[in-house]
Image (tube, rainbow, N blue to C red; front, side, top):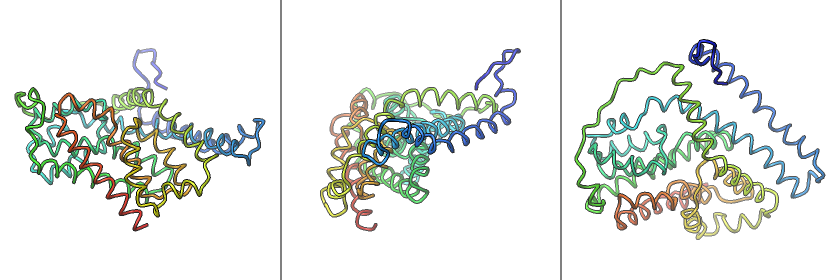
Length: 348
């Protein structure tokens, strides 16, 4: 799709608008074929379609290309959007803002900026050097992996706009309140000494001179990087979801993660924290859990804890934060996530 012309210039750079239209038509055509194709594959196998194995296989053969197609399309579009939001521009937007307003802004920027736990340390250092308050930095660090474009678009595609909007509001609230709370605790002394003593630098917004064709190339680069990195987690998540969909009795899931069990929400958070995956990998599991009778608040708490409080991220952040600050961060975010779970289990 990124063909090079005889002159050596990539075709999307020469005619980006027709290329984007053709790519969108091809994407939609493939997406419409997924359901009949998955049924045809299962029918061709020596299994009974109405059996547990047949249900599990249909779930796997339908969800795998669906999630990968959705992810590739979302990441491509957001790769183009993200070309406007470099780390330098993000730091400049947040530097010098007052707390409260800055927390909301930081949480909102987390939706459209291409950062994850892998970039936590350099991003954190850059924010500190730019003079961004500690609590504002944490609002961004919570929001960026949890309330990202991948999670929101997949939730919209799988569950509808109400669930996606609900998750957006919850995620932004948790990120904003958690960051503001940490800022009120004045825990700057619990940064590692070498981070706290770094010289401050002025954050500036550079000029943006990218063409539409170059933004298309940025979209392809994002697809190669992100989809290439997360596809094993997607396959693992869909395989687990297929097993739940085909074999786990609905009554068992409802009793284990239903709204009647008061301990289901804290247990979901405890289980979710040590897990290491991302939105694309966890959403197929969420889909299967909800189909089996799990409560929406419990499932959202589980999903948020997996994405926002992953153990690898804590290990990475240990390079710049002392243990007390890491423990405070985990406690504040976990408390917010559990509150979300309890409220929505009671209200829905």
